[in-house]
Image (tube, rainbow, N blue to C red):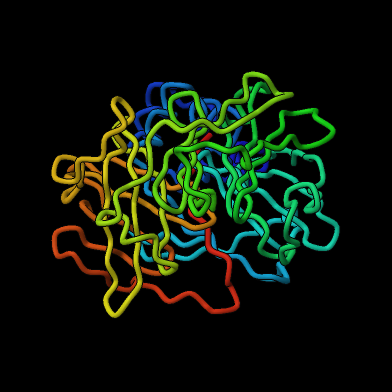
Length: 368
């Protein structure tokens, strides 16, 4: 309800819409980002304060929310893990069957029936849906025909559609497919990943993760090779190796039980290798972008300090500065199903159980 409406004003003392701006800024700076969306919904003047540029810097300290989605769209839940709270989310824009989230809070919806693709932000107030070109799996895969439900791994944005119309959407498909488009494009463009490069092992062309980092799209292969997407010439886009594959003793010989992620933290780029065997094992290394040399004793990360990493298979992984007053656990990696404690070197389940019917789980970092 809008407390600035004429009816509501008669029931309360004073005009809440005319509170001094400096007072509103003081209020909005001490509430969590989830509460900020309620704050912004009060009235236009409050929303104006909440969306100021100087406020957006607080996103770096905001704990991502876990969005749990159902197939039939009847129930969607937003989990605040730090406060152990759950809110139901109405998402009329969500018309697809598979969902993927970017670190800017935007979600990609893909209909597995007709390959319709769109972007929307479940936490935006009155944010319009953005239609994208349809997917054509036959163009994304030259040698296989994957199951429509699982042909896509992730997507990432170069900038927020809320702030600019000049942005790029990059998608990472299963195995070796990369595609991108800009607003207004009629079709996706695809990057050639089949070229003969003596630095690339064929097995490493099974691409595991993608991230937008310092103005470029980076991809990591199954064996730890770091690629950059060269799309300056959109007619001839290609992958370029910037760091050769990891030595076997770092990447555990490319086991099929291993998943490799990319995450940016404190302006550096890191690789996280998660292995499932008799015991869950996890390793993290700083990517040596300067010289390309993997030196495990100097690059391995054993302590995140006051930072927390949120890792996802269908979400862009993010890092936040927990600070001294955060309710999020520092020096931990949060996964949709578990928390990995870097100090104890072991994992534990999330505090709140999520119904199995909500089988798609995405990290959503609130952002205006």
